[in-house]
Image (cartoon, rainbow, N blue to C red; front, side, top):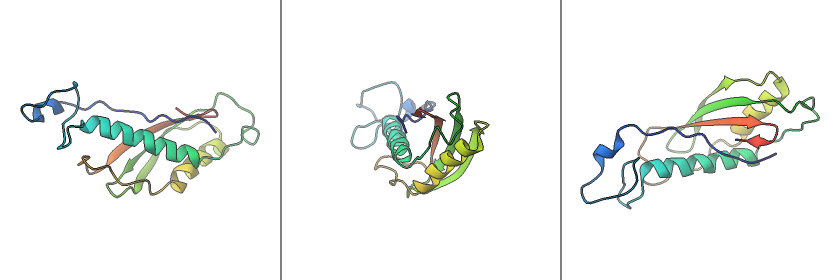
Length: 135
């Protein structure tokens, strides 16, 4: 088991919707609390990665001792926290490793609901799994 980091995608053109009088960083809409939506989504992704990491059980010994394994998975998180549409962007080539990754995501379902201020139909999450943990 290891560390967790969720992948991020940059928002596109969201600054145009920022209310007058609000200032701040380059990306994201401001919600009523003054927090940027992009920051909320990024923090939410990190929280989800941490939850999945806690539910991931992988033994390097049972995985053949391979150190160069790497699998990329993505999924959608609905507003109520339900994980849907899990897919592999890249499989590791080791079926034991790949199955352990998918089981960790399914075991983590559902995660916490979207935080207040995130008004999206779903949040995309992409994770890179290695024997050392989620990157």
